[in-house]
Image 1 (cartoon, rainbow, N blue to C red):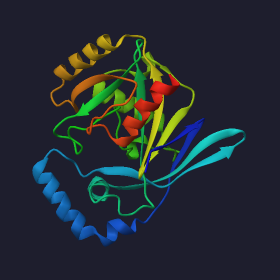
Image 2 (cartoon, one colour; image 1 turned 90 degrees about the vertical axis):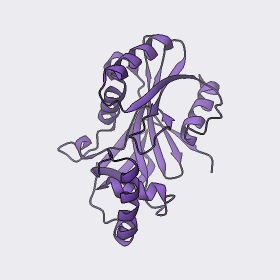
Image 3 (cartoon, rainbow, N blue to C red; image 1 turned 135 degrees about the vertical axis):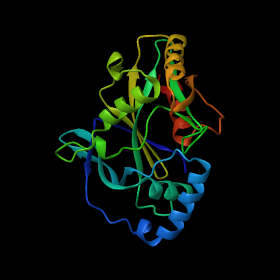
Length: 238
């Protein structure tokens, strides 16, 4: 199935209570899988993360909105669900990422380090939302999550760029990637060097490397489908 695009004006994501049947019924299998993965990557932490039981496009007062109902689970449950091939299709892995574009037209892409659950994969800086992204009113602050992940992974403060007004949402099987374009006032070489210096100074950097990719088609198995689709579409839309 090809990734599907939607341009939306805003995201409305809220935390709800949800009983995840998959996590309960497959608990023993999930725990065994976690033990195996943890032996391979001991630095992984079974902390709380947010998945979605609903991710739907809706119209509201002339605006296009992505409405998300998020619920809390443990990372080991999310990881097993992902590694088992998303057996519960009623649940979605949703996340926000900055599509950071240099002044000369390249896109900032990070390569996950060996301590990451997706080691070697390449995509925009980002991560699965967690309870720390939930406000006092129960809203999940996805732009805040995006800015935090960008700073943690690359050292770049989102405020230095110019963010687009809306979001590009990509539905890629059970992934719902919420991308916000950020135009950066520096060329690709300068951005790459700045991030490289940040990674060199980190005791345990999240990224193994940083790349500046041109728009167009990329036959790289390390890029998830939503990333290859975005880069190909960017070549057409500018």
